[in-house]
Length: 125
Image (tube, rainbow, N blue to C red; front, side):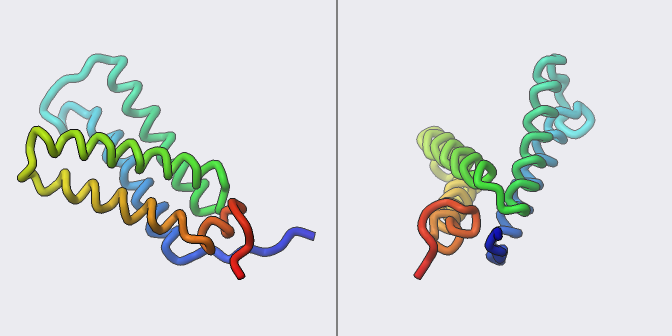
């Protein structure tokens, strides 16, 4: 018999952040929103990444281990790019916000009870 897992409250917040990221990614490919025309391949890439972010959000909500892994990877890459961007614009507060969000998400997802909810790691005592 499969053990019933409860969804930690913060997982919903992280799933919403990932879905919002998907929406913003898709919107970034619309010339009327950005004010610039992108080549067709860039639009297709943005739409594909946006759809993938929606899939990851669903996976988080459903407590799928693959979504946990993908989210950690995405947040690590986001943090890395933001840290690199700080070198060119240290006073830009959105960059610092991106670093803080990535750090909080990574910290939260690596808590023992959250890992366990996704089936990753040992059951918390």
